[in-house]
Length: 82
Image (cartoon, rainbow, N blue to C red; front, side):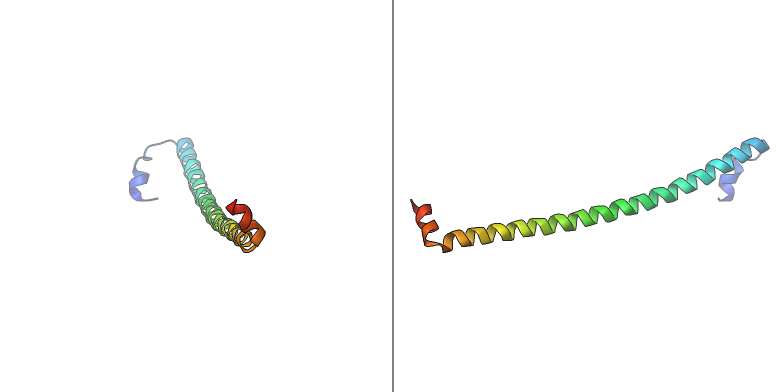
């Protein structure tokens, strides 16, 4: 904490100063927890994007092979033309 932040506490009672100190410690702890959770969230989001891209690629490849197989069979080709 910088000197400017401590200036406003001048003249406060000991009990109030203790409470201020407790709240500052709590704020610091919550700030660290927030950063940690944000990092976890970012990592989860990145993982989800990668998995989504892989699933989309797999679906496209599957559809491509289904389409390719349907046109490679003469019976399927005749059914499409009718």
